[in-house]
Each structure stands twice: as structure tokens, then as C-alpha cells.
Image (cartoon, rainbow, N blue to C red):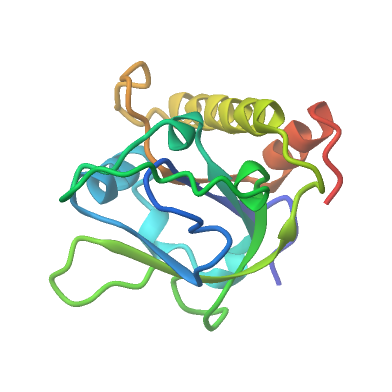
Length: 179
């Protein structure tokens, strides 16, 4: 059994996939993004489902202004209340298997999940933005402490990563989030 001190929380962020933390049961990080995730967290693909306490799905600030780049650009924000509140997510899969699923030879990261609930009841983009940055700051601290050689000052950070359970609870506490 893994205790909470060793458990991790999966952070899932998006700026381009409409209602991915509300209407879907999986997400994919492809190509350059998958590579960036593994650079920042080399063990990401080896973590097992039982090492992940829960996941948090966040719509990044860019989500509310981004228009897709494929075909005819259209806004990704659908204008719903749900999109303005982070989701508490439970991973699907067997506990002794890695949570990342991918096809042979495919560099994409596929994560299957079930949305459990929203982290609070009323839309608040400001708090969601603050949570996004607090979690990202904690990841940068972990990366630096681990001596992982990546440019933590680069403009585009990975869209997914894991954090120590206690670090996420600390961010929740700072923002008065009870889950």
C-alpha cells in the first residue's frame, strides 16, 4: 500500500479542447507536448494508477480566448458554467498498471478518466487561474530540486504533470478549496 506522502496528484491542463474536463472521459497529449511532459517528468509514463491519488482538470486562462488553428478557427470556450470551475477526476484502469496509455510506436499520451465533481460550485476564473499558477510553481520547485535540466522559464510549460499529494493540498488550502 502506498501512503499519501508518496502518492501523487495528476494535473491535467488544457487551453484548446472544449469541455474536456466535463463531457469527455479521456484526453490526449500529442507530439511536442508529450515530449515536453516527459522532459519535465521523465518517470511520468511509468507511474501506476495506484500511485495517483486523484487528478485535477484545469481550463487554463488561454482557454477563454483561444480559437482553434485547424480548419476554420472557432472559440474553444463554449460559455458554460462548468468550464469555469476545475474538475476533480479519478483515473480509470487497473491499479498496478501505468496510467498512461499509448499505442505501440505512438508518442501521444492517452489518459482515461471519470470526472467525479467540480472543486467548487460557482464559476470563478480568477481562483482557477491562481490554482493553475500555484500548481505550476510547485512543479517548477520539484523540477529544480530534482535537478532535471529543463528551461523552467520557457513560455510554454507542460500541460500535464504530477505533484506530491501534500503540495496540491497546500495549494488547495491557500485558496480555501475543500475537496
